Image (cartoon, rainbow, N blue to C red; front, side, top):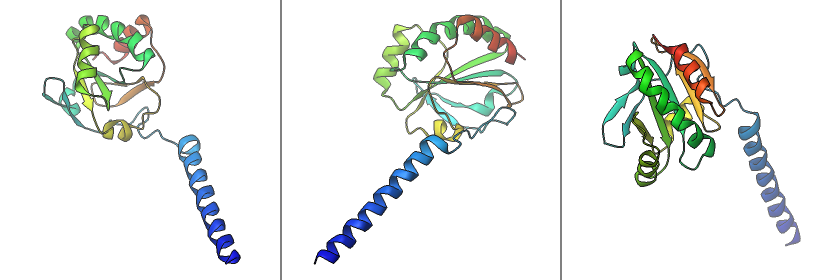
Length: 173
């Protein structure tokens, strides 16, 4: 009886150590970056708050400022007004902002959009498929995409208004 208990406990311990090791490896050591600078961006279709579908490939010929964000993310909230200000200028110069909200309710996202007077498309990635497909880690993360659909740069930090302007200038066709 004692041998059986020891064997069961040993097996459970090995399984737990294996699970812990796998979790640590995937979260800290595995390369999550799936889309890199110089890559052609994977196409996706997401719906915005108004129910309109947006397909990334339809923006070919324009620079795309693809921003992944969340309403709970303070750095995201800080940079949104800067993105709005620059969008109002650069939308007439061939640059589009697509802000992809990650796995939040329509009510929370709409409240955030209304509070911040955002006019660029807010796309909803409810099941995180696009987030995972792009290998996004921290929020905010912004992919700067040129008119040919290639990643020019990836920004994983909070941007100032000047940085947003400089990045939009960088992808302007």
